[in-house]
Image (tube, rainbow, N blue to C red; front, side):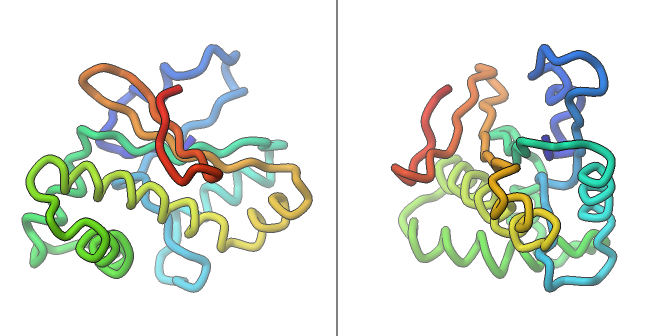
Length: 167
């Protein structure tokens, strides 16, 4: 599971798997740099190391509605960003939400940002050759989850319907 660092230990409580059978990597807004971005890609190095050490069959990109990172990026666009992830956010998520949901504001806009951002992270992850190889060999499935921090309900992205549905 690749989750937001803002979620604390919550992702660790999702699985009933024995220790060592469920790996959690947390990063700002569960962000992953795409394969064509070579600048300081430590998150993908961590993921690639996990892939080299384990027969990973499923990856879950887990966003959450209580994310503080995305509202911060929206409200403080000029604040320093040592992670470099804000540029990807602005180039992908922000543009899509501004175009597809122009009338959304407030909480609805932030929710749309969190959901779209999570979906873009799947695209970024799948752009890496070590992930793409496993996907093409049908040895890996990639999932998008959005957790409602208030209710602990999880919605999963269904690529067939193009919608999030409660699981």
